[in-house]
Image 1 (tube, helix red, strand yellow):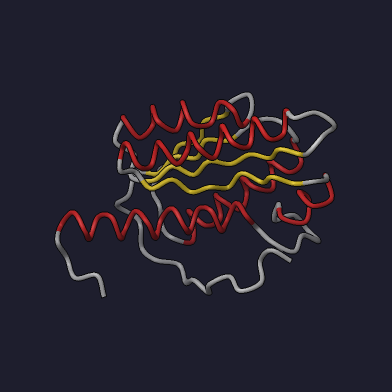
Image 2 (cartoon, helix red, strand yellow):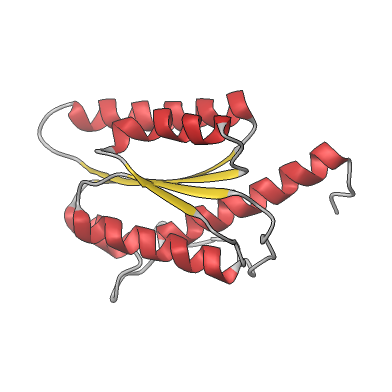
Amino acid sequence: MSGDGAPVTRPIDCHDLRVAIVAASWHEVVMNGLINGAEKALNDCQVEAPVTVRVAGCFELPVVANALAQQGFDAIVALGVVIRGDTPHFEYVCHAATDGLTRVALDTGAAVGFGVLTCDSEQQALARAGLEGSFEDKGYDATTAALLTATTLRKIKRRDPLG
């Protein structure tokens, strides 16, 4: 199980962060679970007025995440799912989404939560989507990672103690 060894995190107060979710539209059941998990994490961390933007698929996540970062969002949570098929399309989309979202984070300084599931089967995606019976909630996990990163980046910019 990929969640083995995951850090234990407690909700932190992020009421003053501007946060957006950018979510792909393919695989509606999985995506609904990921978005619900992200929204739960935002609520647990007291994020006020988060924005949710839907895009066609995972390939489109980086360009919209970049536009959101350019608009001053402190954290962007990218959610999607790519399920392996019989063609190399899986590799192209996974690499494009991963490389693009990494570039957004590095080029803009915004915290980007990576909630893109890259799975061999629909069952693997469902097991990670935060649905009833799922083993993991990657929407929640990606959101808390983005929020923790955003608060750390804010401390660094302000030269606050990091410990």
